[in-house]
Length: 170
Image (cartoon, rainbow, N blue to C red; front, top):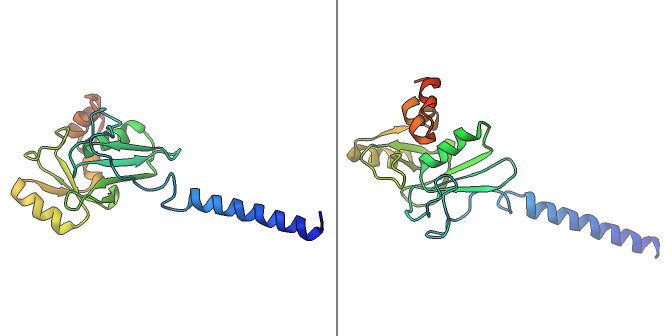
């Protein structure tokens, strides 16, 4: 093979590696971001129930890039706490339009009279005004994710671990 031919083959190999890297590592490629939920087919990774009610779901990717789906924001939070590790990516479903919003950017409404799939009473919104508008008639309040982590009694219910209530700050 001529030197030009070897260079062309090497160039094609490098181009192939770069294209594969873009496909698998670029945001939005396999192993990145949330994925659409297939209602009535996907199951909650925590409680194993079918995801059947839009507006309450959450998803997270673990450190290996595996996507985990949850039917209730409380199930997602419980999984995060049980992981005892930093979660690279987590999203909650916007109760208003159904799209996903990063968990840490979401405006969470905690309302005891809202029936969520597992009864945890947390609904997420992308828009803070929509969260406030939803909270008012439901006797709820807008809370940050971090605030949920400091509520020992709620965490004990979500994780199913009563010792969580004793070890958490209020």
